[in-house]
Image (tube, rainbow, N blue to C red):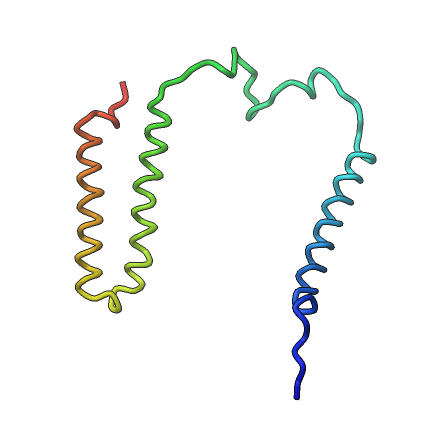
Length: 124
């Protein structure tokens, strides 16, 4: 009769990998902290963005349209994410799956038409 390894023995490789990874991270962080240069200058403390000099306050307000476009992108990107598994399982889902996907796409198109009519995508 074979005896199966205990639960702790089954997880031993995963625990060992986690300990080694954590040890590597801690060692690297400590090494860079103690061995790295410590010279702080005004030039090093200045914010740097693609070689462009800082202009004005970074906290200045900007149009909500940026957020709206980002949210709409995520919304319609999720539609594509739902369409991929449907396309992979198209034959297994049959006519019911086809009807469900068409209803989902119709709902998304209604939402897109609503967004366009409200002028959410117009930049002024």
